[in-house]
Structure formats: structure tokens, C-alpha cells
Image (tube, rainbow, N blue to C red; front, side, top):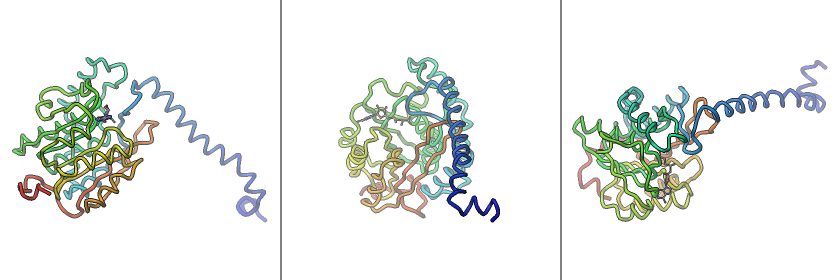
Length: 291
Ligand SMILES: C[S@@+](CC[C@H](N)C(=O)[O-])C[C@H]1O[C@@H](n2cnc3c(N)ncnc32)[C@H](O)[C@@H]1O
């Protein structure tokens, strides 16, 4: 019997392989551990981590947004590049971080990660009303407001409504982007229950307990219309958007993000949408924007 054969096909071979297999697996952990040590000294963040996506993952994000929006990959790519190369927004965000009291727990360089997908979706579909629950420092809100601002410069007006329960949220927001968003303080379910306008794009990113996520979807449901897009920043750990999509007769698709040079396993974007339908909100009339 050859050595290769006894390693593969005998009980003794299985035992003999254990130290080698342990070694391969521990090398992987060692790489992770050294990355974590570097991160602990380099980054200041202790929650709501920000990171770049790997190149491959960014390509998948572009494709994902193209499917969800019904727009061409090339168009989505163009919007992703637009945000990546927006130096005015980037330098404002750096400046806002440097001058905030959060500067000891925030990284100066804005890393948008999957928010590039939020931006591209808003740019492609030109919504009139975007609702984001959960503002925190305001990185997502700033990105959404920047998209709405660009849309308005092209003749498609819109507004971002962002809710948060923490009064000092949103320190990253400043003019000219502030004009394109309105922060509504308080519990987001209560805010949504009182919200009057038809919602084109809804993004859940607040309290991530599944029952709370569901309560937000239920609260916003009367404001959704057949063309609305519903997103969740919680679908990596909760099936609530999948269930809600089924309830409102939409399809569900999930994108898992993959952080580049970061220990965090990543989050994702869940979306409830109509497949094969290019979404362009300005074409939807007041009647079709009703349920
Ligand atoms: C994950 S962070 C939001 C991240 C943000 N969207 C971004 O892009 O960076 C969650 C935020 O939800 C807020 N939050 C938690 N519970 C809430 C509630 N019941 N109503 C509204 N906001 C809430 C927190 O204060 C926190 O700022």
C-alpha cells in the first residue's frame, strides 16, 4: 500500500493527518489574529465598523444593485465610481470627524463599504422620498443625501428622512448635504406610524432586534406603494425582510459584504423588490405611488 493510499484510506492515516490539518487551520487564525492586533492600534472604532469591500465583493455589489434596481451594470458602476471619487464629500466627512467629540472613537477616512450600493440605488432610481432608520454618526445619511443632491442637480428632486433615538446623532452631516435630509428624532416605529408621505426607498438600520425590524416594516407598510424598494441592513442575522417581502408580494435578494483588511465578518443588504422591472421613480405617477 502506498503512503498516499494509507493516509487517505486508513484510520491510522486519518490520525496522522491531524497535526498537519491543525497547522493549516491555525495559520489561518494566526493571520486573523495579527490583523486584529494591527486594527486595534490603527482604528479607533468600537461599533458600527467601517471598511472597504474587497474588489470582487464590490463587483458583486454592483451586479446586485443592477438586479434590484433593474438598471444596467455599467450605469450602477458609474454611480459607484462617482461616490468613490467625490472629493468634496470625502473631505467634508474627514473635517466633520476631526472636529467632532467622537473623534476618539471614529476613523477620519470615510470608508463607505456597502453604502456605495445605497448610493448607486438612489442615483439610478431617483426617489422622491428615502427613509433611513438609524443615523448614528450619519455616514449612511450623508451618502444618501449626496445621491439625492446629485439627483436634484439633474432635475429630480428628493429628500432623505432619517430617524434616530439618540439626540446627538448625525455629526457628519453638514451643508450642502444637510439641505437634502431631515433628521427626525425619537423612536423610529413611532415616527413611521406618523409619517404621511409615500416612501420610495426604505432602509432599516436602527435597532437590529428582529422583532423591532419587523415593527418598522409594519409601521411603514401603509406608506409603501407597488414600486417601493425596501432594504434592510440586518438580513445577515434576521429573516424579517424575507418574510416581509413575501407578505407584500415582492422578491427578496441578499448581498453579503466582505470587508477588506478587517476582522469583522461583514454585514449585508437585504432587498425586497420586483425583479425584471427597471425602477425609475419619476415615471411613477401619484396614483401608482399609492397602495
Ligand atoms: C447601526 S447604527 C446606524 C448606522 C447608520 N445607518 C450608518 O450608515 O452608519 C444604529 C442606530 O440606530 C439608532 N437606534 C437604536 N434604536 C432606535 C430606535 N428605537 N429608534 C430609532 N433609532 C434607533 C441608534 O441610536 C444608532 O445610532
